[in-house]
Structures are given as C-alpha cells and as structure tokens.
Picture 1 (cartoon, rainbow, N blue to C red):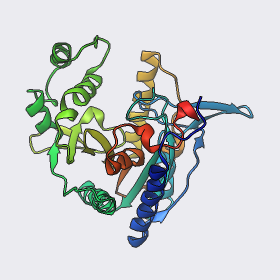
Picture 2: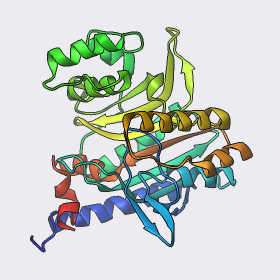
Picture 3: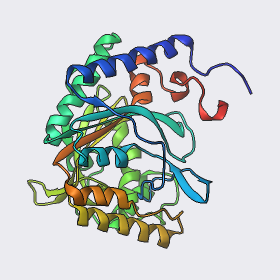
Length: 319
C-alpha cells in the first residue's frame, strides 16, 4: 500500500479553493452553515441505499448517507435557510465515480420552490466554473418522460415492468429478472439515458412517482403522478439531486414503513424507523426545497478528470 495521496497536490489545493467559493457563495446569500452528526441512531430507509453501522454502549449507530434527516430537524426548529459541507457514507463498491466516503454539499430553502432552487444550483455551479476557467452556460431543463421517450422509445410513467424488462434484456448485458419496476427504470436511466444527455449539463425533472423518496408528488401536465425532484447531470455525471420536500408527516411515515417492509421482503439489512424526523414533521415543517450536491464530482468536472480518485487525498482503499 502506498503512503502517498491519490490526488496531486494541485487538486488538493483546488478542493480548498472550491470549499472557500462555496462558503463565500452562501455567506453572500445569508444562508447559515450548520453541522449535524455523522453518527446517528437512524439512517436512510431507502432500499437502494446501504449504511455502515457500529455498536457502542449497547446501542447501534449508523454513518449517515446524507445529512438530510438532521438538517430537516433543524428546519423544523426554525433555523431558516441552512447549508452543510461535509462527509457522508454509502456502503457501495468503489469505482471511477464513487468512493464509499464522499463530500456532500446539502442545503435547504424554506418557502422556495424547486424551480427557484434549481436556479440557485445553476448559479453556484456556474460561479465555480468561471473561477476554475471552465466554459459552462445555463443548463436546459428536461422532463424525465421526455428523455425516456427520446432515448428509450417508451413512456416511463405508463410502461409495465415486463416492457421495461424486455428492453433491459435487449439492450444491456446481464440478468435483471430480480429487479422491480423502479429498479429497472434506474437501470435504463443509468445505462441508456444518462450517457446521451448533453455533456455541457442539464436538469432532469418530474421523476416517476415511485422514485419520490422524500419529495412530494404532483400531477404533471399529462396527468401523470410525478415526483417533484430534479437532478443535475454534467459530463455524464449526476452532480446534484433536489426535492420539493414532502412536509406531510403521515405520508412520510407511510413511505418509511413501505421501505422497511420492502427491505424485509428482499432480505435486506433492517434499519429503524426515523421517528425523530417524523416528529419534526408533525411539529410543523415549512414548505421547502432542498438539494444535495456531490462536491467530489463537481470538482472532477471543474478539473476535467474522469476518476474520483484524482480529486481525493486518500480514497477508502488507501485510507
């Protein structure tokens, strides 16, 4: 094992520049920087996310996949607009675009719409691009259904699981018979849609309702129930993922319970119900939009590199 950092010193210096730029951006906009715990008694229930856990003093704790739950508790307490720049953890295999420990920028805007938040995400990314001498311009916004019809030839909101499975089997190598409908949509999106998105960047909005997670669901102009969720892609990388936040405590508790039932049926690691977040929503949660942005991936774009290891001092394999 080498003792040397994975990233060149120039990239380590570039990360410090980006961190300063981020903090200056939010200071100018009167958004409060906060810190929340990395170790918590609960974690994401999403079956597609796996958390690391540790036991201490007779209790189980989880390294957070995102600071979302604790930041929302701060929102419910009346903190106003807040952001956090720090670490998160996902128990997934390391690869060119993912390290199990990564840096995330997450922020929330009470009384904002998702459209307003997308404009602010764009402003931050374009500021960073200008500072690093990269040529980026305003990002077009496409609906999930539009890009699927263009690149998959189907309507993702109305196509059956069998239709999606036949397409996956025809165009992607592998056995996907164990995937449910949402899993197949994710597979088709990552393999057949994302590589065809404009390399200079775009937002994708109005995801299928089954991919809502913690976002609210509304009807689109075609009458489909869609998740008010938006993702920013640049150079084939998902850079940011934002929600019009779900504020209904009963609906959120029902979604958490559905996640836990699915985990049990699939033999996945059980996790506790996030009762503290449900309690925060019950207390009275403001209408809000929130977003998580992958700082490592943004830095990859700014520096023109295609391996996440090139922007990390010590990836998990070398830590």
